[in-house]
Image (tube, rainbow, N blue to C red; front, side, top):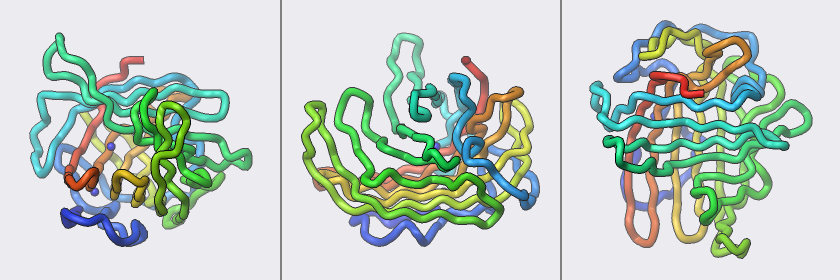
Length: 250
């Protein structure tokens, strides 16, 4: 699931990050950031086993967990992974609401590509043309990947409803010890950002993600900060969310 944006028009480029690896994260206890020799791209994403994990959720500048939880659902596909974040209801009778997700592919050379995402499955999807290169086969501390693409809005009938230019970047910052409700992990720290116009709306998002092996052979997000600004049909929104892993469902 990052520092402040100015509400209003989403102009500019995502290559100027407001996130950093060293800033404190409320709701999390962090150790000192340490360099790492490398981070394999498969580890940047997820292990091949299906994973569902639940997370405590922190909104805005609060250091107190929200009553609602987030759930990360990861499923392997023939080409890579399908990842989805859901906001769980505060009551047992409520329904989970979709937040965002990505369809990820193996690039064939060890790289990881994002083919589409952010739209709810079965509804309008945002397709990235060409697929966004999130990571090469191997990243070292300080390595950075930048991509330019066309964001195409595709409806449920497969028709394009709009499109616009976009940029994305990913930077590997090294390892950091992070204390979460589920345990303490020596996690890889990944900084990333998205900035794109898909026709009927605009998105600017920056993330700081901690990824760790939670069980032998099983790697996933153990904590994340997301700062997101959106503009759709003349309305704009700004949100900041932090999550910390609480339990493993599957």
